[in-house]
Image (cartoon, rainbow, N blue to C red; front, side, top):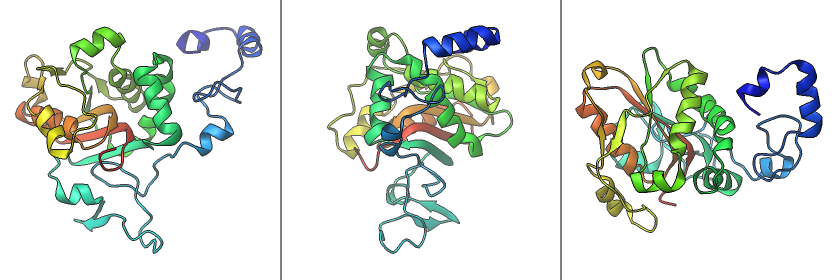
Length: 258
C-alpha cells in the first residue's frame, strides 16, 4: 500500500492491515511490516554493506580477511575490486544495494521481467540507503533508459521507477528523460567483456539542450550492473554534455560478468 494508504484515517488503516497483512517482497508470506522480507528470504538475500568497491559497489571481503585473499586492492586510499583496477571507469564512485544472487536476483528479475512494478518503492528505498553517501547538493538522478521495444513490451522502465524513489528519499532532482537510447541494443546475456562494451558503445545520449548540465553532478541509476558497459555508455554521454562528476547507483551488482 502506497501514498493513498498513508492518507487514510487510522481506523481504516487498521482494518486494511487486518484484511491485507503485509507480505514478504520475495515470496508473499506474511511479515511484520510493509516492504519487508520473511526470515527465509532474508537469509537468501545478500545486502552489500561497507566493505565494497568504491567504484562499482561490488561486495568485497573485509580488509585483512585471511580466509579470502582475493579481496579488493587499495588504490588512491580507496578499496577497488580487481575489475575496477584494470578497467577505466568514467565515473568517480559507485554503490549497490544487493548482490545479484539468491534472493536479490529473484527480486530484480521479478521487478524487471515479472510485471512487479509494485516492488520498486521498497527496493528503491534500499538503493537510496546504499547510495546516500554519494549524494551531494545540486545532484541530478538519471535512470538508464531501456530500448523502445522493451519499454513497449514491459510498459515501464524499472530503472526509472527505482530512480524516482532514490531521488525522493535523498532530496535530489529526478530527470527520468535525461538519457535516451540512440539505437536498439541486443541483450547483454552470453556476451564476453569486450562484446558487452562494443554492444553498448555510443548507444546512449543526452536528450535535449544540455546547457544546465555544465558541472552538475549526476547519479546514474540502474537495476543491475555486470561489466559496467551500459553505465560507461551513459557516463560518457553525460561527460560529453558537460556534466560531472558522475556517480553510479545500482540495485544489484553481479560479480564479474554473471
